[in-house]
Length: 171
Image 1 (cartoon, rainbow, N blue to C red):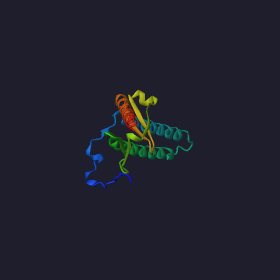
Image 2 (cartoon, rainbow, N blue to C red; image 1 turned 90 degrees about the horizontal axis):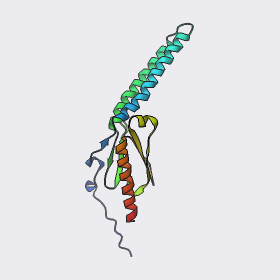
Image 3 (cartoon, rainbow, N blue to C red; image 1 turned 60 degrees about the vertical axis):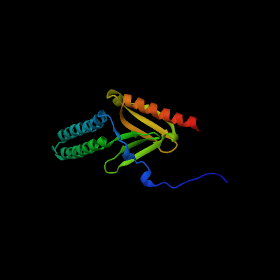
Image 4 (cartoon, rainbow, N blue to C red; image 1 turned 90 degrees about the vertical axis):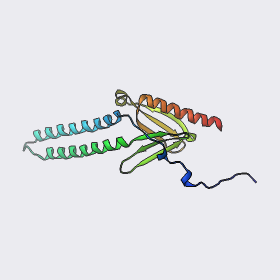
């Protein structure tokens, strides 16, 4: 017989993610998110005006369609602002978590023991605004933490790799 014991835990004693503060993403992430929507709105207005001018009967339909699309884009920009303000991450002793969503809230957590690889990604727009995304690949769901400042992304990636490596050495 083995000495294996699997005692039940009292859920009241288990720490929750709310016990520790989440860290919000860099403010430039909101600027990048709104930049694309703003450019789309401007392009929509330009196309609507050009089509309305080129139509022989000077129809208002293209302008109404463009106005509807711009209104929906402005609604999307408002929702994006709310969503980006809720994006945050948290690093604890044994895991890293990422919180997202407004209507449908989501918290994804990856234990360091499951981490297989971590990398930093930067597109040209992110580079221009000093932002990066940390991707954590794991034996399970992967985690993408968007909207980090470059220095924060470097530190977070280093910490994740260090903690995952420390856990590997303990095995």
